Structures are given as C-alpha cells and as structure tokens.
Image (cartoon, rainbow, N blue to C red):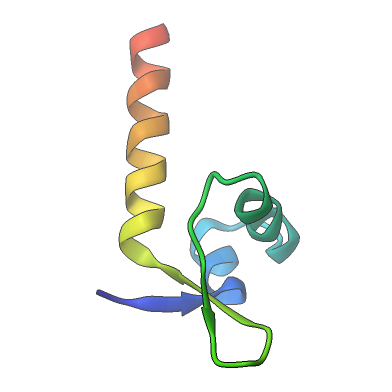
Length: 62
C-alpha cells in the first residue's frame, strides 16, 4: 500500500493538481486526510482501480 500526495498523483497522471482535487470532491478518487492539517494523500491502488474501471468501460463502448 503506497500513499502519495496530490501533487505526486498529478505528476503520475500528467494532469493539474486541481484535477486530482476535483476528482476527490466528485467522489471519483478516494482520499485520506493525515493528522490535523490539510495534508491529503491518495493510494496508488485507488488510482489504478479508477483508471482500470474507466479504461474497461471505454473499451466496451467501442
């Protein structure tokens, strides 16, 4: 289980960090709050799961 920051997730997916934040707000991507601060982490496994599901649904539509 690997946790990464919003910025690291954005670099991994090659999108703007606000895109990751929007996906979190929309419930597309799970997030984990650390401590009392505002540090938000995302699990790489959750990213894999979301994009595996979306790529499979895109393939079915074609």
